[in-house]
Structure formats: structure tokens, C-alpha cells
Image 1 (cartoon, rainbow over the protein chains, first blue to last red):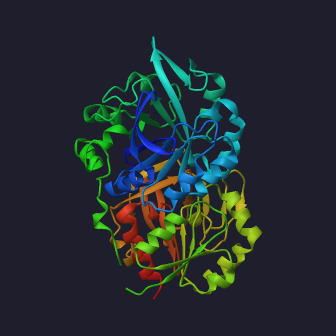
Image 2 (cartoon, each protein chain N blue to C red):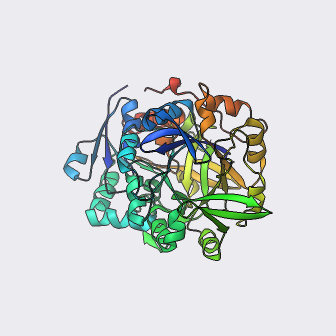
Length: 256
Length: 202
């Protein structure tokens, strides 16, 4: 059976990997490529490169080129500044296996169809910063700093089969330890779409609860991976009774 | 180990660096090229692929590499297709529209039964005595696809189960296909790639 995944998030701002707290405060950590290399060796199920300040600049092709040339043995998801089919295709050519789109869902849903024809639906993730207020799921618009219900256009786009997974970002709890609001999962209305939960989901007991939910295919974790060595193995060791791949360490590199 | 030259067929389909790196880690040389003269000098041809079938096939045909790859396989040269590159090996695909494939292994590409996608790590279940797959039985590999192969059992080498069984690896003599991304499957992937090169390049 397909296993539940632990995606390791590298949040990038101004080209530097940062620890992020609610997307409001950021602590610099260093070169994203160095961190990607480390996570690759630690046996993460996926690496999620999340460039959070690319709205005006498009994807960070230079960074992707550097990371692509590392030849990671771990699947790479890229998010940040993807505006068009051409952007998405170029991101994959430079090394990503999948792309996550956010602003494109608002600005040009028709481009999603074109992108899907190039990458396949399996290559596209909808990144949805959301919060739960009074039982209602609200979709955050970072550019306008407003929140609104998930509209019909978005729901139609998600249900159309051109996007494979929804990255539900609890943006208010992003950067906390164990703050992810599990009510977000139950409130998400597209029941056929697998969910990646992100934003304060790094505490082991919460991760266990999230991954036990049938709709959750993966949990994405950022900051807490920076607090200790071999954090991926440690987190996975804390999960019990779940179909999770055993984390391997790349010290066992195969040479023929 | 004999050092081999892997010819990564460049027809504009996705990221080739990870495939190249995986083979370098195994000690092999790589040539990334769409030039038949360069590919002629390689021990094994690798057909990569990310994305949708029609566009990939369109690119192969436009470059003339469809004929080159098919002729090479029919002349007993080792050929490995990965993910979409595996799907291109069969007769046709219904992804978006009916599109002819390379026709090197009988079969078709159809939507995954009972699910829209098969994304993530899954265990391989070998269904052959083929030595190149033996050590990979029960190992986990990274899958990312929404269409799957329907091929006769005689060509199936391994399955993955996600509700229904999915064809995960195929082989017809000198032609091998992997539905999953072995190059993105860490140590298990590299071990399998090593076994395939060893098994095909004799």
C-alpha cells in the first residue's frame, strides 16, 4: 500500500533558508542547497522547497538550478512564484519533481489546465494557506492580507482532476510546535483530494494524529527539523502503527 | 564492476540531473544527448520522462528519437524507461487523447483503476524470478503517476499494491521499464539501478 509521507520543508526568503514563524518572523539558517543535501541524506520522503517571497519575481530558477545539480535522491517539490505553464515546466526541468501553486489558483486557473497537460495532474499541488474561524475554512490571500471562503472557482479547479493534492497550510500556526488546527482537515470540502498538512505539525503526537486521518497523505515539517541531528529518523521513530517508510540514512550509499 | 556509459535520451522531458547523478554514484559514465551519434556510443539507453504522455511522444517524434530508440531496442541494445519513459515503451496511451507509443512491449496506458493518482512510496512485489529485481522485493520506491500500464503478465516483473495491483516494472528481453522513480528512491533505487545495468549490459 502507498505509505504516508513526511515532507521536509525548506523555507527560503531572499535566497536564504529561514526558520519561519507565522510567515511573519524569520530566522536565517543558511544555504538552502546545503540543507537540501542534508535532508536528502537523512531519508526524508520528500523535500519541499518553499520560496516565500517570489510573488513579484517568479520562481527562483537560480536556486533551483543549484539544487537540481546536487542530483538529490529524494523527490523535490517546489513552490514560489509560479505564474504560468512555462514557469512550472521550467521548474521541473531544473530539478523539481512536482510543483505547488498558490497565486495561480486565484489569478489564472486556466493555466492550471495547461500546466497539467505538461506535467500531469500528479505533478501539481494546490498550496492553500487557510485558517478556521467559527467552523468556516478561510483562504488567505497573502498579497491583500485578506481571508475569504474557498470560492466556487477554486473548488471547481480542485475537483477537476488537474491537481493531485492539497497542501493545507495552517498559516497562523506555522512555526509553532504542535499548533496545527486539526479542524482544518475535517473542514476541507474536497473529500476526494489527498491532503498534505503543514504549519505547526512537527510535534510527534500531533503528527501521529494527522497521519492517522484517512484524508491526510503527508505531513510537511519545517522548523523542527533544524533542532537536532537526524530529525527525520527521530520523528519517524515516534510514529507507531502507521504505514510509514522506515527512514534510511545515506551513509549506506550503494556503489556497484 | 564494469564501468558502463549510460545514454540519457534528451527529448526535453523533465529533469535529467537526478538520473545522471544516480548513475554517477554507481560509478558509470553518462551522456545526456538527443544526438544519435552520441547515443550510439553508449552501452545502455535510458528513456526518462516526467509529465503527460502526448506531449512527451510529440517531442520524441519531432526530434526523430522515437525511431532511433525503437530501432536500437529492436537491435538488442539495452534500454531502460523510467516513469513516463516506461509508459512510452508500450503501444498506446489514453491520457488526454489516444496517442501511439513506441510499441516495444505489448500494452496500453490507462487511468489507474479505483484511484486518481498513485503518489508516494510503495513496496515492490516482484512477480518474476529475474535476478535483476530479486533484491528489490519488498523495498520501497517513489511513485508519482496518474496513469498505469496494462501489459500481459508475461512482461510484468513487479507490482505495487494500492487497492488494485499496479504494474510497477516490466521487462522484455533487453527492454526494461520502471513505473517509479528509482533515481529518487534513495539507496533502494540505486541498488536496483545497479542491478539493471549489470543485468542488461552483459
